[in-house]
Amino acid sequence: MSTPADHDAYVAAAPEPFRPELTRLRAILARTLPDAEEIVAYDMPGFRVGGTVVASYAAFSRQCGLYVLADAVARYADEIAAAGLKATKTGITFTPRRPIPEDLVERLASASREAATGA
Image (cartoon, rainbow, N blue to C red; front, side):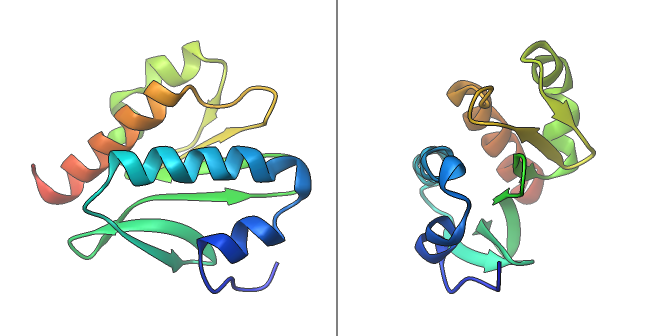
């Protein structure tokens, strides 16, 4: 995919099987981070608070990813593993068949904002 102009363009250009999950993720993040600015950074749609990108999401050929600050992933590492999801230092990968639970997305986004702003 080329660099998207905005979140809508990114989702529209993503592989069709991932579009519903990306739309769901965007809605959860927007609701959880109402003070965030929707941006595109690093060729991914994201949410910025106080100059820091606190959450981003992406679609790849076989999976999707949610990206938050490292402190958030570390804080919820046990829950991520219990959900059967794979994580790196700042990302969690998932598929539409095994999506990230909504409440976990909310906690990860909130923890990422806390790590960025101290609040």
